[in-house]
Figure (cartoon, rainbow, N blue to C red):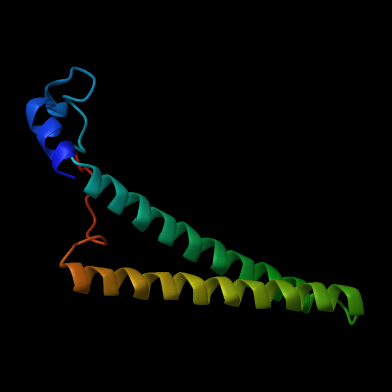
Length: 112
């Protein structure tokens, strides 16, 4: 650990001075990862909702067919399991924020 610290102190690295990164809105990795987590949770919630709607429509239009009804029921079940996973991941992220004093879920998307 001491070797890595001494080496990192001797090698000055300023990523903001690089031409390719100078106009990039994320100068730090933390906000970038936070935005990816937020976008992933929004996408997962949206896909869960769409799968619930699709399973519900398939269940209604199955017309009593056993195979279609079972397929629709499985889609609804898996969508609800996905929703529980998304809510659980949100809870875990909130616990990590509280434990380490971080702000992971604060939106840092660049605005014009």
